Length: 156
Image 1: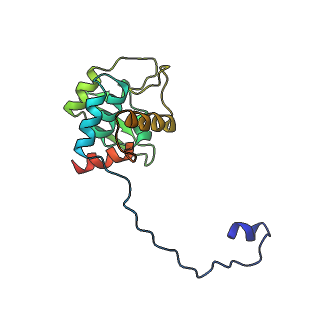
Image 2: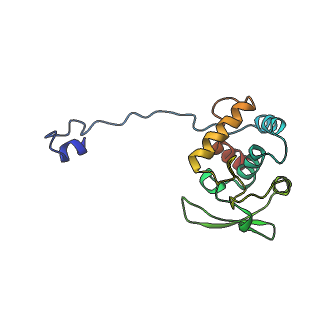
Image 3: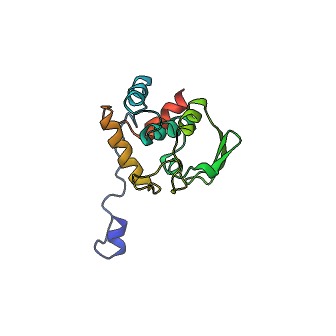
């Protein structure tokens, strides 16, 4: 409304004093252990979808950080991450399950662990779209998302 007033389209704000309606939401779905197992059973070790799950689940990072991780970020059993959202620099210990997936990883010219079929780094949105498609291929329910794996990592 303020925008319309600033442009001269309206003289007054008729929404002043109107209270915002509180909407209860269940939030983003946290993956269950059964859903994680179903995804892992569908995608073989060494595949891009399987590596994506391992990076998200065992680092607990956002998709914007996961798509930027690469071999240059690994230091003596850790992965160095500078978070896009907060700017915080972290050293995350490599979980044994992630280490197994990384050992099956095939190097490409992308400079990142996760790459498109053309060998280029994923954009954040491109990765999200592919990940949702991989979840559908694994017959997971709608709502399974990268952020849900972040929640599952926090739960474990």
